[in-house]
Image (tube, rainbow, N blue to C red; front, top):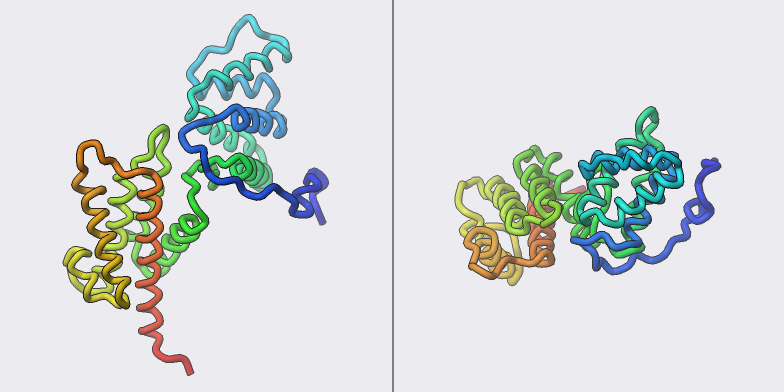
Amino acid sequence: MHDGNTPFSARFGFHSPDAEITIREDAPEEMRSAVAMLGYAFDLGPGGMRDLLCEVLLKRPDPGNWSPGNIENEVHRLIDSAPWYKIYDFAERLYLEVGKGDFSGDRQRSFEERLNRSFRELGVGWELQQGKLVARGSEAFTLATRDAVAVMQNAGMPTAAQEIHESLKDISRRPNADVTGAIQHAMASLECVAREIDGSTDTLGKIIARLTFPPPLDVALHKLWGFASEQGRHIVEGREPSFEEAELVVTIASATGVYLLRHRQRAQSGPQA
């Protein structure tokens, strides 16, 4: 049975294809409007919207505006003039507000789904996960990082999983992503896994040759280690890595850690009958 409030497109799975991600450190007009309209769609009304916005922006509501129409105009002005990252702060605040009194969590799930659909259709590189906005990268990035945390936790490696978590936090920082921090934490996670597999405390650079990578993948991983060491640890003035470079390192480090743990698990299980 479908929820009577579920729109036609959602009921039958119709939606626009995901747009290429072109927006990270910005909140264009379409995105600002989408966030505002979602607030109204979840029955927050002009007064409630203004209260939440003023709380996020640390601004005093205009005491001269008391009618719903004037308050709604004030909300639009506040949204239009807010710094881009405050719009995303506001989206997170809305998520909390729509969940008040809803013990099933259905309203928050619906809010999250609709906001994330807007992000994908508008090419915005963010997504809401349980009320927190995190960087949205390529499909490979999403799959690799999501699987890495779960696999590492299941393998009894909470430190490695936490390093990936910290890497995602760094790459998701507003208003500026901490790309060097993301690289450092991702490679620290991989090094943690490699040490566990190798049974040593050597650096990853020394361990790579002793791992199970067929050539030339071992050479490629060694080059990745060199790049990460230079960009994540020994920063050259004027050569900060780009978001895309950090995304690539985090993706590869996460996928490699998963590969090593799964390879060990298969080896320990032995040949299947």
